[in-house]
Amino acid sequence: MADKNLYIQHSCFIRAGKVVVDQSQIEQEEDGEHLKAFLKRLYKSRETDYSKFHKMDALCKLAFMASEYVLEGVDWKSEIPAEDFAIVLQNRSSSYDSDLEHADSIQREGGIASPAVFVYTLPNIMIGEIAIRNGIKGENACFITDAFNSELLVDQVEDAFAEGSKLVLTGWVEQAAEDYEAFFFLVGQQSQAEKKQWTVDNVKGLLHEPF
Amino acid sequence: MEKLFASESGLKRIQDKRISETPLPLGQVDDTVLNELFEESFGQTSQQFTRCERLFLVAIQQVLHQSGLSLEQPDTLLILSTTKGNIDVLEGAYGDRIPQEAFLLPKMTARIAHCLKAKNAPLLVSNACISGLMALNIGARYIQRGTYKNVIVAGADIASKFTVSGFQAFKALSEEPCKPFDVNRTGLTLGEGAGAMLLSSEEKNATIEVIGWASSNDANHISGPSRTGEGLYVSIQKAMKKAEVSATDIDFISAHGTATPYNDAMEAKAFSRSALEQVPVNSLKGYWGHTLGAAGLIEAIATIHSMEQGKLVESKGYQDHGVDEPIAVIHQGIEKELNCSLKTASGFGGCNAATIFRKK
Image (cartoon, rainbow over all chains, first blue to last red; front, side):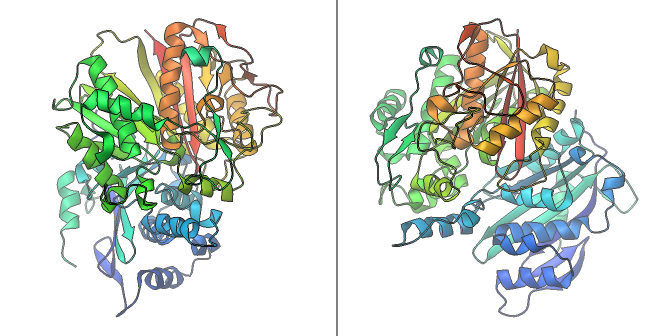
C-alpha cells in the first residue's frame, strides 16, 4: 500500500546554530547566544505577530519556528481540506525542560504548580501549537525514539497518505536545555523536477549534507 | 469485568503525601498485588523495575502467555503508549535503585524491551490522553500494511505527584469520584493502570476485528477542547468511512468521558453531530479513574469484553443528564448484542482519536 509518489516539498533544519531552509542557510546563531534568545530573534526577524509564541516552552518554540519556515508561502488551504493535512513528529527527550520546571515547582519549598507550565509537559503539545497556528486538523502522531528514525517516519508518512492525507508535515524536534535539533519536511504529491522523492535514502542524504 | 458488570467502582479516597497534599479519590493499583503478579510472571524480583515498567511488563506478559507468542519473533512488534512513563524517577521514588536516566522515555522503552528480549525495537507513542488509542490505531495499520504478523499494543501510566499537582493547578480534579456526563460533574478523577492487546493478521481464535480508525486535531486550543467537538467529529467520520459503516451500524460508544464540564459537553456535541445520539454510551472513568496515556487502550479492551459477552456497562457516576445533547448515557447495565462499537479519546494538544471494532 506504500505510495511511492511522494515528494519533499520543503525542508527546514535548525541545528548547530544554523537555520537551513530548502538547503540554503538563512540564519545563524550569534556567538554565545542561548537557545531561547536565538529562537526569539528568529521569531522577531520574521515580523510575525503571534502572541501565543511567547507562552510556549523552548521545545514548542523550536517546532513552531521550523514549521513557520517550512510552510512559508505554501498555499495549501486553497487546495486541500484541513483534515487531510497530517502532522507526524518524533523526538527523544519528550518535554524535558517543562518536565523539570514543573517537577521543581512542586518539590521546592513553597513552590506552586503552574497550569501554564504543566500543559507543556506533553511532547504532542508542539503538534497542537502548529495545528492551531495553521488550522491543520488531520492525523497527528508523536513518537518518542532514542534517535532520529527515518525508516519509521517514512513508513508513517506513507501510511498517512494511504489513508487519505494529502499533505504531511513531519520531522524530528529534539530539545533539552541547550541541546536542540529540528528537521522538518513537508511531504506532498507535487513532483516538480527539483523535488526529492520521500525515501529513507533521500531523508538521510539531506540529513548528512554539510552546512 | 465482573466488577464492571456489577457496577463496582475501584476508586478509593487516598491520603498519600507522596501523591497529594490533600486526600483525593484515585484509581490506584495496589503495589503488593502488582509485585506479586510481576514476580509470578517473571520469576524475579520486581525491585529493579519502576512501577510504570512493572505495569507495562505484567500486562504484556499476560498477552504473551495467553497467545503463546514471544517478542523474540521477528514478525512481532511491541508498541508502547504513555504520557509520563517513569516520571516518579524524577521525583526520587527509587533512590539509587533505578538510574536517573530511566526517566527518559527511550530508556524506559529499552529497559522493557530488554526484559522481554524483544527482537524488534518497540515503538513508543506519546500523544497525551489519546496515546493508548493512537498506539492501537498505529498497530492496526502495521497489520494492514503487512509489515508484521502480530503487534502487541500496550499502554501504562502511574498516578504521581507530578500529574496530580498539574491537574490540581488546572482545578480539573473532582473532590468526589468523577461523574461523567452528569449535571453535577465537577471534574476528573485520576487513575493508574496498564493494558495490553494483541493485534494479529492470523484469525485463530479472534472474536473481534479492528475495522476503522482515525485521529484529528481541533486546531483550537492546547488545553481546552473545541466547543463544537470538531476534531472528535472529524475522527469519528474518518473512522466510520474507513470501516465502511454508518451511524446506524454503531451499537455502542465507549466515550472518553473525563467528567470535566467542557470535555463531556464537547463529546456530546461530536456524537450528536455524528447522528449517534441514540447509541448507548458510557464512560468507564467512574470505575478506575482517568489513566491518561493508557486510558484509550484499557477502555478499548473493556469494549471488546463487552462485545464478547454482549453486556453494556453502566456509566458509573451518571444520574442526571448534564450535557445539552440528548445522548443515551447508560443508566443501568443491560444485556445487548453488540456487533459494532466505537471507542473515542481526546486529549491536551487538541488531539482526538476514534477506533471501530466489529464482532466476527
